[in-house]
Length: 424
Ligand code: IMP
Image (tube, rainbow, N blue to C red; front, side, top):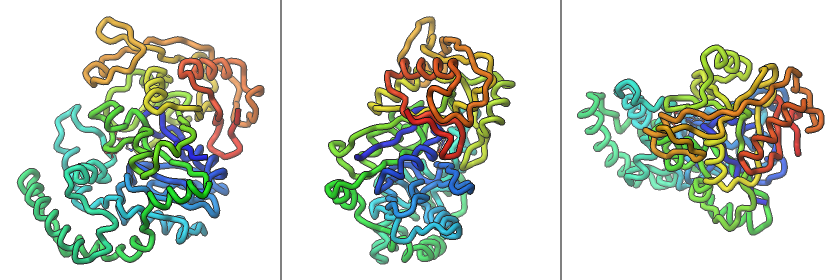
């Protein structure tokens, strides 16, 4: 069975844990978009791993992991991660395949990301991770990117780098007064990684086609979330890739006719890192409480995540865009002890009530949530293993989310460990 796992909010939904659980029943695990802006946290053998680029399935012995053509790769970050895994005794060689069509993040992409963010007027910055993601994707679309496979021919790579760098240095000098990047230094930087990177590189769309034909189970691991998707998210406060189901198709080269199920992951509340409107954001005291209890700090940048009530308007948007077949609801345990819980079922925008997500940022930023209030529960639920053992108010809360999303809940997570999971 081929399954796609999608974040149904603004990222950080807890996809790492779900992938780790589902990867056991998969033969191949694929990352298809984003880069090392992502941070998937997994607890494995009482050790905590934060993976930014390599699919979380690498922690499952024997699984093949693929970094697809839609991912942007910073070789330095990739090999740092390989080293962390290998030092922990996890074999990577022979289990990781990197698409030769994937684009490379070059040092100037990171500088451009940083300079752009720092030069923005108040309220205009995106709050990016400054990993060079946006500038790298921009170059891909402008057809001035450099791909992993370009490293195969040193003469082609050198010629391409010289051509692109001339343009980049010109732009950086004129726009930001930045020092020019040295061709020799960048070349030396890539030469350090070239042989190892080419050792991992592969025609991954063909690999995935052959794997499907051979009856292998493939899990597509999304990074970020629907509301950060460059087309379907809260544009311009988004990332630069397609974090929705279409991104899995183009970002891996798999045909949609080969996909069996799409699984959506959401937290039992909502979080967001970086700038941009967030209608259900908690007032400060509750935000601090949930931030601390839920350890809501970005896995990549360490920034505190903004926290808020469950927003069924954006979640329904995620259901529609991705055609979600089932849901995994994460971090339910963090809500224990709150006397009451709110769910936004609609927005009031300019005097009108709407149940639909408004695409224009100038409307979305004015959206005032229309809340329903549900009774909370006092009990610690971190040991609960079965649906029937959950407090009745927790079950009611989840049933309401299920009804609002018109999608069955199949997984409820009540803690970060693998065994703190209820399967339905
Ligand atoms: P970029 O992807 O670094 O360009 O950042 C664009 C926006 O996406 C910012 O608001 C980031 O905080 C957000 N973002 C990027 N990656 C993640 C992630 O893995 N989780 C949550 N937010 C993310």
